[in-house]
Length: 296
Image 1 (cartoon, rainbow, N blue to C red):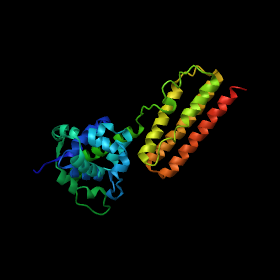
Image 2: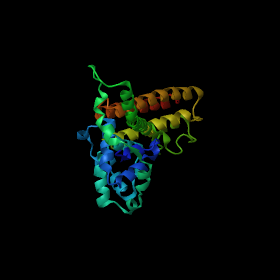
Image 3: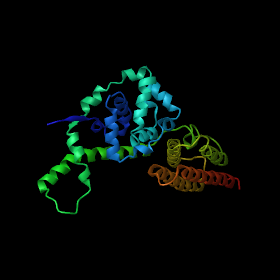
Image 4: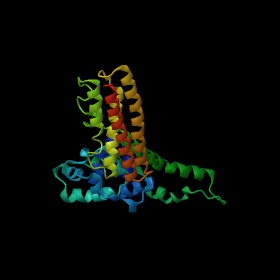
């Protein structure tokens, strides 16, 4: 019986471990096989592969120097969703990679890889589309075929669930409502609400031209809204506090909606960015209005 190592099946179930796993694949000689497997399972069109330099941005050079740990969840997700970018990244690592990459050991990935009859399974992928016509396949043969596809289905599920985990994972930040000291400031109600408006107004102060950059910004803002919901707000009256929490729930729902649209590709990035900016502008205006009302 011919067997072969299927590197992709060594993918950790915990997406937090993906950066290390990807590093191990980047120093392998059979990365191309991993890429083909992931593209097949996720039904990725290689023709639509983004430019890895655009996705990683200024972090591209950091990766060459220090590895994938410098990347955020959205960037790791893009690498998993578009595996062919790994080939370009591998080329850059081999040519320009720093000393860090000489310490990456690919043997762990090789040891943990599962032995599968990949060639035999690959030949049976086409029958996934059922034939309504007569068939000579016995129940036993059909059961065997489905059994052989189980590893592929399981791996696809791991990748898809993991991508969702990465995209929805809270990301700590130091801007917006997560700005240190913002919610604990000993100030008047007016100044407190005004400072919240100022903090929210920093949303578009960084370039949001890529899906990764916009996704990170939206995720950070959503995290800040959750921080706001969990805060005590001793600077405010009970009525103002309740109104702030009510509005904040609505704002977070809107921001999460924009993030969901971005993750699903439901709308062009330009449309989502404009809608997100409109949401934040309304939020800022409402906070300023609430601040002025405390002086009435």
